[in-house]
Length: 392
Image (cartoon, rainbow, N blue to C red; front, side, top):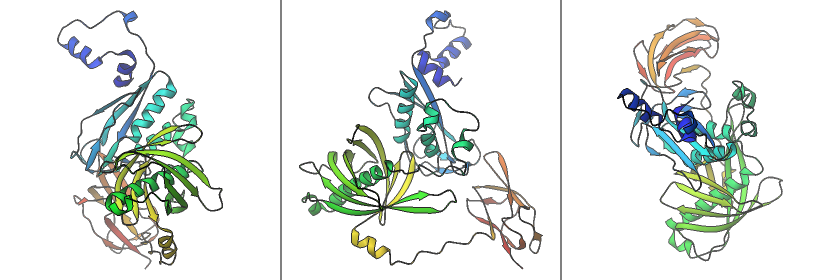
């Protein structure tokens, strides 16, 4: 079994024991009765990997902060990287082994979920969204797991955290509060007013066919604290309405230093639940946050902005049906077609190597090769155009 798990439940340092053995020193103990099992531990392997396509991601860790143990938790992160480290095409893309310990299996799962929520990684795509979603699954908590788990629970592939009637209002309320606090920081005159604020939020949801739906939520936000604290805790009440659904009232507190990415949310409806949200970046019309492992680019609009946005023409999507794109950065091993060749759908056109793996690229449709933009040995980036097809 993975040695961090053994070490967490026994308290033994297995690496120390191996070094002692190699040095000819006696082991700490050779009495099996001295090895006690305490609680439960669980490990997640954090990879620089796209959790939707299961392809490695390369780049520089622009921002990187590992989670630490919270109250009553024991969290351990075994890694060999730091902020500024490079994930290259030449090595395995594993970033770390993140482990958590608790008195019971459910406690260990809860500790790991919280640790994943507090894990900040930018600069590369990573698999935290999938890890977080799996450990939150009731089937996983009940131990109903097998090698078919992903196929059974994500038959159309993993598409990020699915917002539901509970999590959508919570995300809308929390994001509105972060926007409110940032706006007060950037516009000090606004901080003097503690009146309610009305927002229209557009929450993205990736659908099974790969398209993105926008879930609209109207939020009336009221600051309950006497004054707004830009580096501490603020109490809010949000009334969230979405479509024809009944309004949801969310009472919560936000502990956030506006200059830091980590925001701690405590929802006080029914049962008090703690949650961490990461503020990743401001956007022209809102912000990018990480919620339950998944990144969400959220538009936070005034009611007038929302009505004007309805009049804007949607940007046309690029037609890539005639293009063969590089699925990841790597090196071209071979090219199987030339200009003028007639190819069938699924025919091999090139092979790209990355992370010690060779990936066969195939024609997305039948056609005639119009252009070939690479040669064997060429280095390519993700989404580079390798081959173009035409109908002629």
